[in-house]
Image (cartoon, rainbow, N blue to C red; front, top):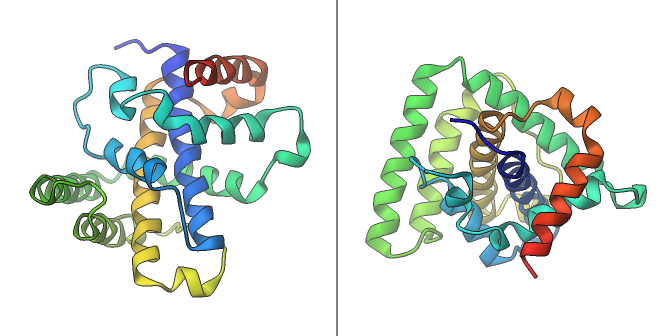
Amino acid sequence: MEHTYREQVLAFAGVWQAVKLVQDIARTGTLNNDDFEACIKTLFVTDPKTTEEVYGSVQSMTLGLNTLLDQFGDATNNRDMELTKYVMSLMHLERKLEREAQVMQKIGSGIELAKSQSEHFGSVTHETVIASLAETYANTISTLASKIIVQGEQGYLSNPSNAAKVRTLLLAGIRSTLLWYQCGGRRLGLLFSRKKLLNQTKQLLNETI
């Protein structure tokens, strides 16, 4: 299936939204629940007809789009290298996962379990669902050689609920990274298409107003 550049940028915004929420938890111990829910829902859309179907709506990715604008815009003081490091790590992990069929299968099974739990509890952000997704991350992605080291306040990161949310968000980040690649996204392309990326990001943000 051929994807549009609009879909590619929307998926990329999904990556940035996930890592921004990870940073929020690590630094403040809190996050925006609507933004968090939007990220978690992406894990349960496994057979989408369009990229937008994964995210529910463009508006649900407003945080990710604004973060993307900050990172690639002209205002260099808005750029956050910590977030960039997280995104690069997700890209590296996703490429490794592509070669680990058994690990991918275990992730798929874990997501299906969590999906059934979310239907039982009537919420994708129920603590049981998040704990289940976090366990899937710990038993699969965390076993790979490359790990993502999250920086922040140890008091927040050592809290079991926060730790589970961080792992779940990283799983959602990898899901969006995979979708970004499927839509034609490439790391090298980011170096040569900054203006195009910014223009499309702004167009998407105009849709959220």
